[in-house]
Amino acid sequence: MTLVKYKNQIEYSFITWMNHYPESNHPTDDENFYCFVKNVCRYARSKRWKDTNFLKNKIKKRKPNFNPVKLANIITFYKQLLDFYKAKYLPSSWFIDPDARKIKHGYYIERGVRNGELYEIEKPKKQYISKERR
Image 1: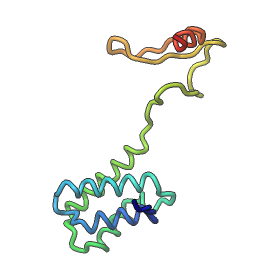
Image 2: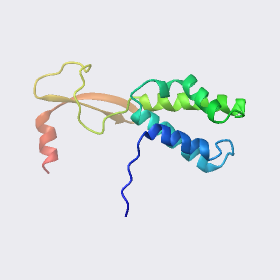
Image 3: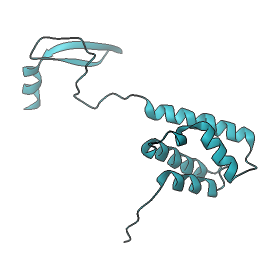
Image 4: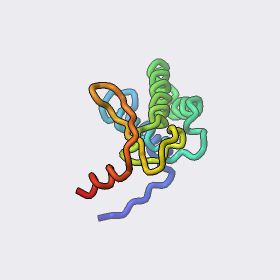
């Protein structure tokens, strides 16, 4: 077993993607691209990698004859994936919602779906605690 440390994860994943013939339409092209985008979302503290013009120039520098139509599609999809990563998600259980309406002390708000419709009701905390202990 060997310990490996990646340094410059974004650059590393970008070059890995570029070195594996990103225009070949092979399934691993997508995997390498997704790995690169995920690393941009996860590790990019600076804004340069999130700038589509920066990426476009990096690709052109690395592969000067890159198909311009494919490049435009990649840049569009890249932007969509960055936006997807930034999208909000619902928490898995409890959280403090500063924008929620005010309710009585000792109660909480339960949000859910019933018969295909969203609902929001107040429930006493005692009711929740007694269910959790069963």
